[in-house]
Image 1 (cartoon, rainbow, N blue to C red):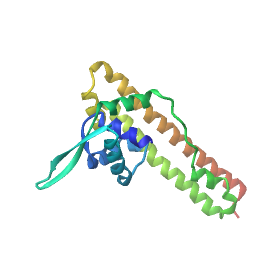
Image 2: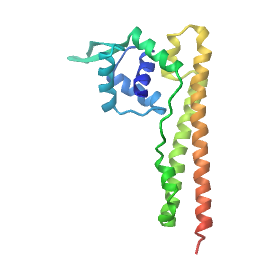
Image 3: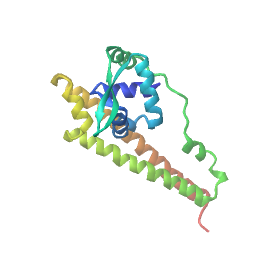
Image 4: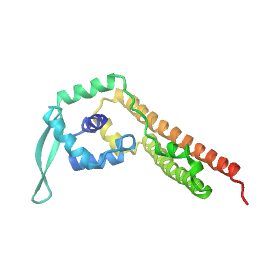
Length: 195
């Protein structure tokens, strides 16, 4: 159900087409909630049916049209209600840690490669999150700039601080995952000494 609220968050900034939402999703909320376009478009239709959005046909290109969505008062109220409620945590699905629990079944080099792949993945994410913090600090984040333009100046520092706080949490998580995989490499070396 968080997809709905991620879309409402984006549409609270400005009206967008499904395509615009997909692009923004990939560059902003997609960092904390992944959704392919095959999930976004049906959810937009459901949200419109539920009265959370209003859609209108807009000109797209020379002859085409697209549906652009605007958040309604009901959509704003639903988003605010969700934000003021306590999050219900879902059960964890973590294939990397599941696999780690059974690495004795893997060849030592395959186990090492799994840990190295984990480090590569989280190192790439770490740099991505650090770049987002730099953009926030430098005022060059496109989505944040558009969001701030819709808010009174008195809200800017709070909005910016919460965005930075979110990415700092992702940075800490990535750093922890890298440290964990490095421990895994050391453990594999200890359990399977060379030669």
